[in-house]
Amino acid sequence: MTERKPPGVSWETWIDRQIRQGMEQGEFDDLPGHGKPLRDIDQPRDELWWLRDKLRREDVEYLPPTLALRKEVEVAREAIAAATTEPQVRQIVGEINARIVAVNSRATAGPPSTVVKLDVEAEVRRWAERG
Image (spheres, rainbow, N blue to C red):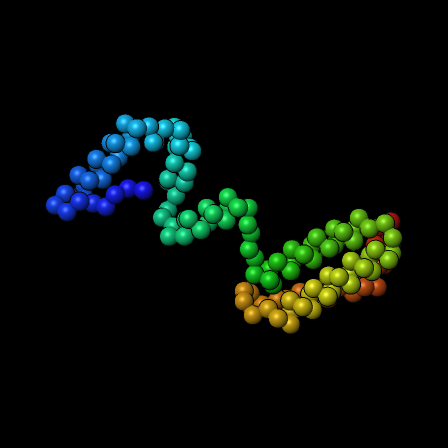
């Protein structure tokens, strides 16, 4: 931890001295990214850059529930196509339909949901026709 700025010393002088001392003591050696260009230096200014960077580093995604639901339906349709038995298809459709009902009844943020429940019999019929 650094000491407080002494009274009567300008900020620039005090900061310059701390940087110089840190460089002399090797405190800036082997920092992450040393010798590499600054990432996104040419991008427009973004006040939430630190948040976006944190989310990217932590591999975190956030979609409003109504948009995430669309993605879940796509994944469910892929699972239906890969299912090997009719009971599996019915279970997948039942689970995604329960999720659709839950999101449609509670979603208050984000765009409105236009996703409707899947027709179980139609999905089973399509699955059987593929097989």
